[in-house]
Amino acid sequence: MPVCRLERSVISLRGDDLAGFLNGLITNSLHDDLTFAALLTPQGKIIADFFVHRLAGDHFALEAAEKFAKILVLRLKMYKLRAAIDIEDVSADYDVYALWNGTGDVGLTDPRHPKLGQRLLTNSEPLTPEHTPEGYDLHRMSLGVPDSTWDFGTEQMFPSDANMDLLNGVDYKKGCFIGQEVVSRMHRKAEVRKRMRAVKLSGAAQIDATADDAIKSGGRTIGTINHVRGDMGMALIRLDRLAASTDDVLVNDIPLTIMEPNYEPQS
Image 1 (tube, helix red, strand yellow):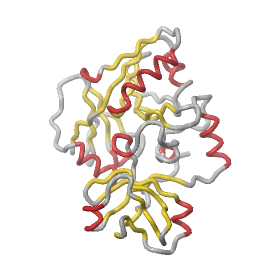
Image 2 (cartoon, rainbow, N blue to C red):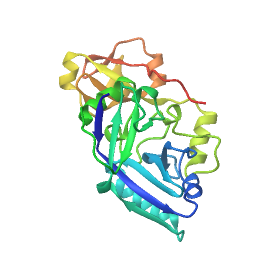
Image 3 (cartoon, rainbow, N blue to C red):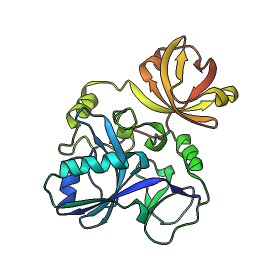
C-alpha cells in the first residue's frame, strides 16, 4: 500500500458542545469519524477547507493545508467568543498520512473519493513513507479531485468551484453555517458555471504551462491553470464556454485535454 506523509497543520479543539459549535460554522454535518468541510466567508468563499477528525467525545482535530493554519486559528478564536473552548495548533505532535491502492484498516476512508484511499492522523510511531507528497499530488489529480494544498488559496473559491458539493464537503440540508445563504442560493437557482477540472498536458505544454496561464478555445478564454506537475494539472474551467466551443483547447497555443471527473454528484 503506497504511504505518503502529507504536509498538513493540525488544530486541536477541546471544550463543551464542540459539535454544536462546529456545526454552526462549517459547510458539512459532522460524521462519527472523519468529515470533509470548509469554513466560509459570509460571502460564501472558502477561507479554509479541512478534515475534521473526531478524537474522543468533545475533542476534535482539524487537519488543513499548512498555509491555512494561522487564519483558521484566528477565525475559530473569533467565533468562539466567550465559549469554554481551547483552540491550539498541535501540528508538531501529529503526523498525517495518505494510504492508497491497498488493503487494510489503517486510517479512515477519505470521504471525498474512495480511490483516494485512507487518511491517518496519528501521534504515535511514524510510518515509513513510500511516496512523496508530489506522488500523492499526481494520484489525486488523476482522479480529478482538487486539493487546496496546491490548487487555491484563501477566499479565492466558492465550494462549487472546488467541487466540494460533489465530494461530500457540503450538506445543503443541515442547519445554518457561515456563508450558507449565498452557497444555498447558488445551488438552488443557478447552474454552476465554473468548476475545477484536471487537465492532461501534451509534451510541449508540460514545459511551458504554469499557474495563471489562460486556457483558450477559438481565441476565447475558457479557463485558467491553477497548478501543474509533470503532464498533469488542475484548472478552473468555465463550463458554459467549454460546452459552446467546437475548437481545440489550448494553453500557450499548445493542445491540452480537459478530463472529465470520475465521480458522481453526492445526494
